[in-house]
Image: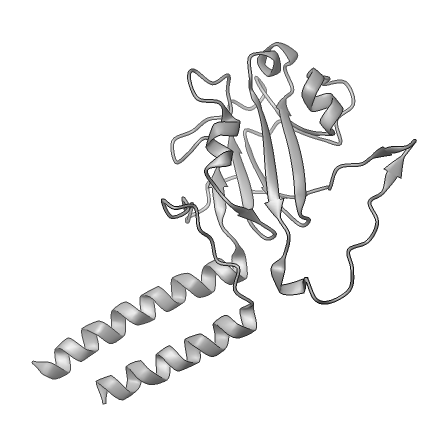
Length: 200
């Protein structure tokens, strides 16, 4: 019985380890508005209230679900966000299931492609945290400027026609992993070795 109990603990630790590795390597997908949220004019809480209770890091992704052809997602600069200008976005998406992976830290501005929807608060600002694992390397490059105004960070986009098999919500306290992958890997080896010693 003791052997079976040790094996059960080992299996639980291994599952936790795999989930941690997945988060560090692949980042987390956040469905805009929560697990059942849709990119549409909000009824009560704004999308920014949803975003403020989460921590976004480089490598994480936003998933926008909406009625393709009837709405869209625009990545815009701060001025266009503030004034709901839909005429010249940085990027435009209208596929109904848009996945945007964050490659840079800083603010990212999104609005509906329908100006009236944007004016009714279908808009979102996401602040992506700096990558703390690189803070002691070289200083960040100076921001690009266009005619004297700062250009917002760009996001790379992965088109994903089907929902991802894993769509995680962050822990209730909003904490996310900021551990270096090397430190995490070494920790995983230690946990694995300890677990094996317990099983044997």
